[in-house]
Length: 246
Image 1 (cartoon, helix red, strand yellow):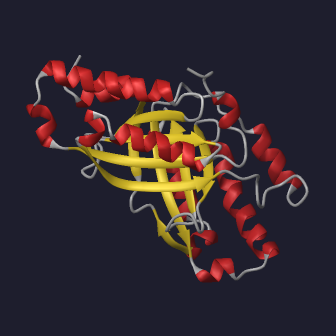
Image 2 (cartoon, rainbow, N blue to C red):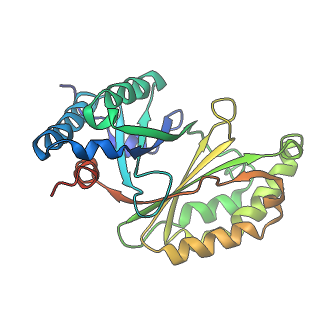
């Protein structure tokens, strides 16, 4: 087995692919005996172990918070094919074969496009100094976003001005909410995947309201649809819970 991928590095690097996939467990899975379901859990963990040097896998429980899915996987990889290979092997496990994919989103991380030290030094300094200091995040929220043609036909300077107005009211919430942006134009049917983690859903709700009140919101063709809310859990716990095992 290879060395495990560096989690802190891959989550900070640009040029990293992120694949988000949600699944619904088929009811016929529960007709299998507990020993078979326990074996299915072990198969998943074996696949995660086999791919650990090429991908980082995070798991989330959506059951009870979504009518469309039961769980979500977020897979990071420097090479998109590595993420694809993991997902293929995962889908070939007994648990994977009893799971129906309900949504897949793919994006790539990039350096800041607008709020950079060169183009927006004061706002960039605000972002840099606003570090998360809340409790360990328990929840994740994924919001896909598609911009309209008017947005893409604006100049870089016009979009920068809009993003400065967008960023200003969010700074106060960054102590309670972590966020990460993935670019998806040309890779998926949306332009961005926004990913948030928090222990304070009230703070996130206030952050979302503040984003709805800025003019840049007028350029959204899609915001959410779906919005994916989940609890952050180890993959073993997620699969055991959905396998009705303790």
